Image 1 (cartoon, helix red, strand yellow):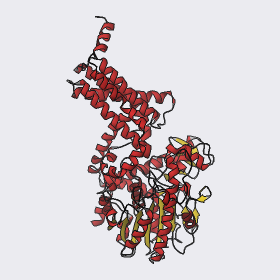
Image 2 (cartoon, helix red, strand yellow; image 1 turned 180 degrees about the vertical axis):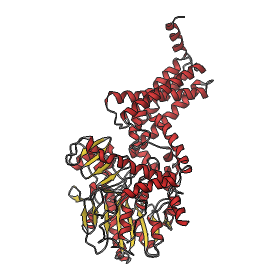
Image 3 (cartoon, one colour; image 1 turned 60 degrees about the horizontal axis):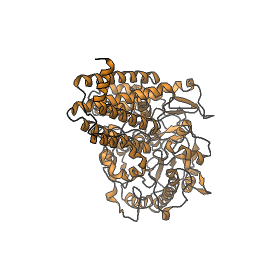
Image 4 (tube, one colour; image 1 turned 60 degrees about the vertical axis):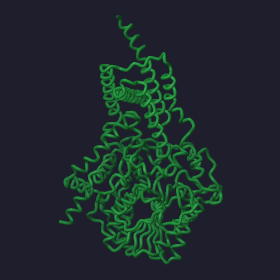
Length: 624
């Protein structure tokens, strides 16, 4: 038998399998290449993505056909449905978070009951095309003339061997493009574009499994290594004037949902978007270059960073995956000094595992949705509207022991930014982005709620002896809306430098009776813990903080974001490119080189503290 004859017979016998493999690969490749905004550039990266998706197809087909050898059509149908569901989940998640699902996030399934309103707004009719290969498969199964012969064991072994070879080649190419890609993964988009979505999920399963081992095998030596690094960071000095400026004061933290700095001092159709905050800033310390450093945990990440001066994890949320760790958090520290820590958030106790995490962080009381009077009339979007939330919260605050450390988490300015006509205090913006259009009125509503909050605090007699810290928790407008943002900002185009600058969120520190100032300090959420403790007169020597007092005169101009991007006084590094802040244009890589290793070390050592629960060793040492 000639080779040509053998190939013809083989292909004819397995026509069904090869046809479906082609459809499966085509769907996989097209969705990853054109539905996600992956930074694929150049022929080399295009080939790498093709190889990555091809290896996924071979591995998955081999696995499913090995399990259902007697019913090949069932195995491929199951593969088609499951792969399509995973792709759709990735796509919907990506549209909102500009990120990819991880195993720790999937374990947060309880949160989906609250997220449904957002999920439905992210679905599009065209998403049904992801299941087109499944529909085509059903037609082929019903075609009795189509042979449905399974691969024999030797063919399955050959397919697996070829897939393994492709994966090895794929990883080799990826490592050439981005050395050490899988050893220090800070940007999942780069990982997906390098090895494909399905291979990424396999990689995520492996790394998630390794997390449990990290804690089991962690030791006091690991803590010593981190302590050695932190000791090399600049010390908080030259803040004698403000050290203890709010000693004995009540602390009021306000997490301003999805608030970015671009709305401050901005007008839409002649009306201020944040009129109250604009006035409050004039009598407060306002940090213009303050960046959020959150990851997949969003608001919960912001809470974690601000209370611990540690970075969030590169995958999932610390609030869920590491809620039983030991943390040297601000509530735990202040509780020893007589403060009563409490949280006010009109959401379920189980959402983001707050009911378990807050006691770990040192909070004595969590006022959740069950503590509030929530009706249809006072509900907006995700729950209790901010005005009702603040009014009801102040009544509860009055009953707390003083001094207290209190945190308020707002809800109204949350995606998808739904606000009825009667609650709008400013018109929607007019652009091609409904998200940005709706964002403006919900920001304005939150601003009005903050005004009422301060009025209520004054009426309750709690204003004068309290320090107020208001911060934006994370972005509200993702890069998907760059075109609309360019119109709003009066720019021709938003590049990745501009995108990083849009990660600035407001930080307002208000101490009644004290004159404020606009501060240009380049900073991030990790800096808030040492700043607040110094204002309260608490020495932070010996603490494992990755931030520095915002008022310190010797602090370096460096802010590191969770994806590995960083900002200095002269440059912005992101997407493996160095930008000049003076021009916003790409500059020489050498300009950013001195800070790259430092940025990676800060993230890596912070991760080791969380993964290994290293502070438990410090806690044991104190007890000895």
